[in-house]
Length: 113
Image (cartoon, rainbow, N blue to C red; front, side):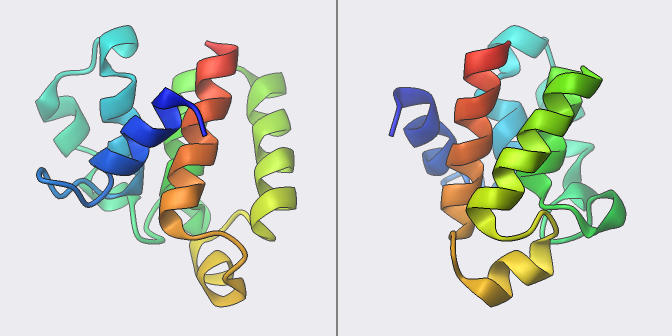
């Protein structure tokens, strides 16, 4: 696990009680320039509430990458590792924990930003 993956995992449900999408956005706040208010605005993007029920960590990483080829590559790798790309099936299959999904997404973003 990389430092960025550990940081994202620590932010997820940490002292600030960030959900998966917010933890990704907060991890890369120094690059994206998002404010804390911007990140709070994604309150409805975690816990299976991201568009299409997509994992919030995956969703946030795709927003940050903002590149069709990279978002497709991320979704493909994420799906292969987690067994799905939507929250409910990921939780049901128990292949990856939510924290592991957050770390996976953060590490992919770090490699490609």
